[in-house]
Image (cartoon, rainbow, N blue to C red; front, side, top):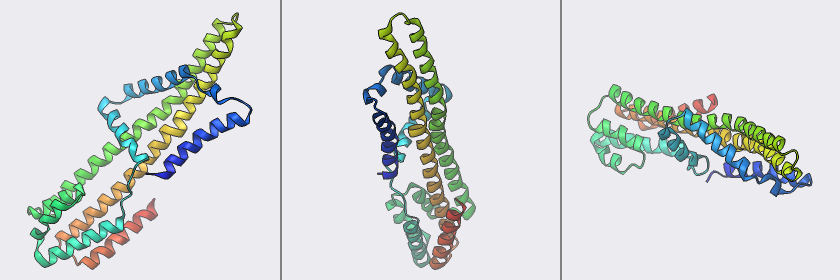
Length: 252
């Protein structure tokens, strides 16, 4: 569980509703089903027009990474690769076949399988770079979906505000309906801004961060596997990968 994401969402909504209470208002004034329907429905509709359905479904599945995510420890990956290197130097690359089958990491499993099947360094790099590029493109699309939704939501909120004001103008003679119309107008704007700035854009930012973390792990793994294939000393592999990880961290 990513506590920062959960805490951020709670603080964001809590600040808005808490501010309403501190100003002497009632939370019920911010609960407007009509405004919610306009903003959420309109934002979803605009997003559906912008992206294929499959991409949106994948983005929704990936969104859980903003809340539930097990961060992978580079040190553990480096240790695992060093163990593979030691075993390969002692018993040959074929000795890694069982390791590939037991590995929970699909990327490592694929790389080791290529090595065991007799692939050379170029083939290993080509296959795994395709895997890395595919992952990056798909991860970017998921982040772009939420980024786009974050751009649509405030505008849809303004549309909701205009609709509320139109309702008010059509009912100037009915003072009882004026309050409801004005409430929908202003609350729709708030909903649009909250949807964009507390949910959609932050999730997009978090997904980009997760993507960078995964890319770093994959690049680190690729370099380690290439060194194993070349028979590099396990100690040198550890030092090289640790330096690579630290350099990448400084670049962020």
